[in-house]
Image (tube, rainbow, N blue to C red; front, side, top):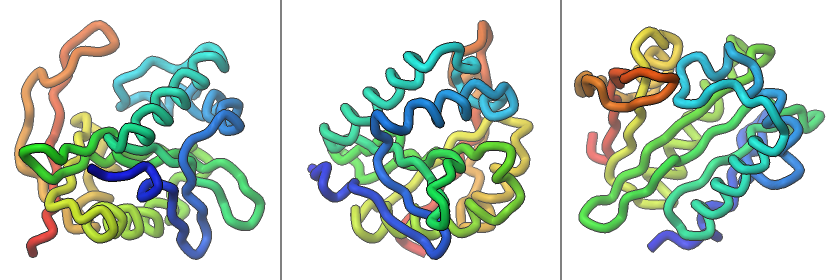
Length: 182
């Protein structure tokens, strides 16, 4: 079992990633209230800060159970909120894999944030957590996410047809994966 202490966060040259906490809720609300941010996600834009607080609670429960972690991405220089990243799930019984996920505020897109954060997130998963496999689910049409994953060694393994139901319809998902074994 992965202990929550192993999911305490990580840093890069320009960014600090720490577990989502209550003081992130106002920034998280502004971030996830933006329809451009949630366009390819399985949630509608948030309407209240309480919804953001619920996401923070979910993330903390996940981390405390050692079953995943979501981190805020904050600029080291001024603590500006850029988005979130982490592991939506960690499967350790009968597997050794994690589902990574990430989202950026529009003001931070195209500025190399995920190009810097992704290697550290992969290293956390395949290195410190000793996972064998990392997976990412991408909604078709989200080309920037596909390109990001491919640049960082993930391969598209196929399309999961009608894999999820949100926003009143079924959605396909592209399954990307990277293993510890080259």
